[in-house]
Image 1 (cartoon, rainbow, N blue to C red):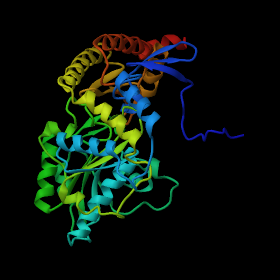
Image 2 (spheres, rainbow, N blue to C red):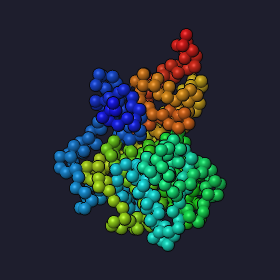
Image 3 (cartoon, rainbow, N blue to C red):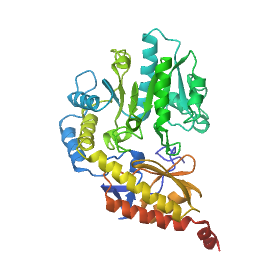
Length: 398
């Protein structure tokens, strides 16, 4: 008989009852160091006092009223995001996939409203992940995810990542824009080269295209800047955000320039739950922390320390790990053995991580992780690596 909870996830047999900072505890008292952060979502860790207090106080007042009325919490969060970014206007939704859907609609709407309605196609990249809706499956282009869902949604062309020549060759009279993750998360913690991002901006300017950035996983402070594209010194026309923006509370957003946002008039797009008082209170509490002096610098410093020490782990265990990837606190270990085996070994040693494409182990801890947490995490990774050495496997088999 099928379980009451639909079986579309392969869940680990762990159930957590509480958390504090970068740590989680199960009901039976086991403690785990969380280097997964709910897939890069629990940006302020677990039980953050400012975030939890803000949510509790707002929940006691009003949680939801709909977008038929003004939502002061959304107005405040939008104002702060505009002040901190390239954007002139913000649309709030509930998730990353919904944010990407909104971004695509806004880009197509801009083309239509400026007399270029034939431009509806998007250049996307091999190894991308943009979400699980039907359109975002097509934007992702992964055959495994597309299987069984009928014809693909039209309008998405895929080229190799970090290959500007392939991008330029793919531009046609039907191309509306380019959609890219500054760091591919699910694809294996693959950063876009800074010159590549700069080249995409230049190509969009040259051909009259729109540049859309998917910063759902790499944004909101994860790389040591508020958004990852800032390292390249470019600005997009539109950008999708989610995951860390709510610190674990469901919240997504589309940030856009006035040239894009001005076409989104009443009736052009909407959402029931998006931008409600409770979600935007969470978003404002997260920004309180992220925009505080020194916070992003601390993320960059801790990320550099973790990178340097993971590089030493790679040198120590070349039969288990091949290289370190990523930026800030969005790092990956390319594995020489199955990444799933390493992940299981980490779990046995008391750490949570996430696998990704290209046989990569994804390490995306809360941004509030301490130096002592990092030290303990490195010790756990070394213990797990010893378990996973091919020689250790042979001994165990004997």
